Each structure stands twice: as C-alpha cells, then as structure tokens.
Length: 179
Image 1 (cartoon, rainbow, N blue to C red):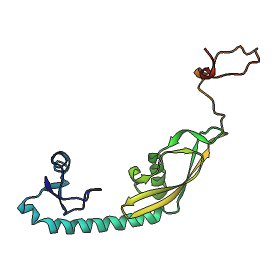
Image 2: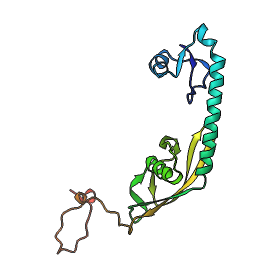
Image 3: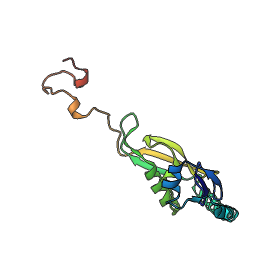
Image 4: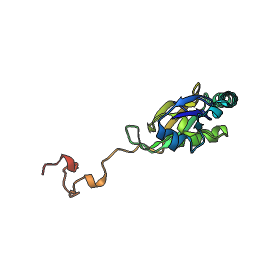
C-alpha cells in the first residue's frame, strides 16, 4: 500500500514522505489514527505543503527539547529506598518514579518512555540518559540511598524449617535439606 505520511513516525519516516507499507499496517494503524493517507494523484500534490508543515513543527519541537535538555543536564535527584546488606533494593525505582521526581525538580512534564534505563535496583549513584528527540539527549544523576539501616537479606519465612528454639542447630533452608 502506498501512503503519504501526515506526521513524523519513528522508524518509518517524516511528514510528507511517500512510502510503501504493508496493507494491514496502513489500513489498521496509520489510516485510522490519521498519521497517513492513501497516496493518490490528488494527495501527492499536497506532499510539499505537508513536508514544510512537518519541518516547522520539528523546528518548534527541537527548540523546546533543547531548552528542556539544558534544564535537565546536571540535575541530581536523590531517592530513599529499603535495601538489604548487599545494597540490593527491596523493589526498584522505575522510569515512572524517575520522571515524576524530574517533573517536580524542573516544573515541566517529562515522558517516562523517553528515559533510557532499566529500573534501578541497587544503592548508589547512576547517570541516567533521557532522549527528548532523535538528536537531543540530556543526562541527570540519580542517587539511591538506604532508608533507615540496611537489613540483612533472608529467605522468606516459609523457606525455613521449623526448629525447636532450645536446640543449638542452625537454621537451614528447606531447599538445602535432604528428604
């Protein structure tokens, strides 16, 4: 199916491009969302106008993304989380948590999907990259500190055998016991 893109689409093309796509992709995704239209003789005459409008929109977005990148660069955000003795967190700090903390810091909305990292699961400092546009990235630092004292890591209670407290035997996980 030959289509004319009306909007920029990552990994496909920019507004005003004429492309061949799979029939199902065009019919079920691009056309209903008004991201493209079927390339006919009449719609091909609009190509240059759509391309110029797309360029103006990209220029505006690039300016906004560059300003946001300047605000984000160098920011340090601190999180407090429960962790075991080895520094491993009981849970994780997700990209949603990072975006929310960043929004509070700069008073501007941040899309969590643009943050390029796995969830944080260790104590310490990590540099996080946020990709605002294809050519615009910013970096900030996330510090994860322990909440309270570090807790010893243990197996869940049901993993331990029942023992008499008066006996001097050590606690052995059920998985290591012979049956």
